[in-house]
Length: 178
Image (tube, helix red, strand yellow):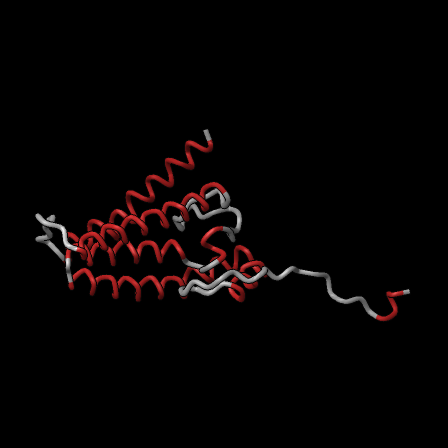
């Protein structure tokens, strides 16, 4: 029952949060008269491909949170274990980057400057959230392990993973070597 419950919680999170941020807000507040194109151009194909990539990235991150972290992306039910695998070795916030990709793809597909402005506002808001809340909670929850992770992995711009630091005991004193 536990895996099913975890799946249902993650499904609910995906429908509510990204569904609201990627679907409802941009289409109801920023681009109220969006229309499906009659003839697709390169921009439409690019937007659709980018949307597919963003969806795959998001679902991969969510899968890691559920399977490896034993939780959800929701602040009320965060992962119980620290996740430093997959995309999380390359960048600290790949799930947010996936959401940005989805909204950017939507702006490209609909050729909407309004949604592009929303994307910029969303990026600023989420950056503030990460600095003010999320990093503080992660530092409190995972301590030195999170500090090492912050030192090794960039917040927003992906970079090739470095070997993780290995925590070692402190050097012994000279009198202890005998």
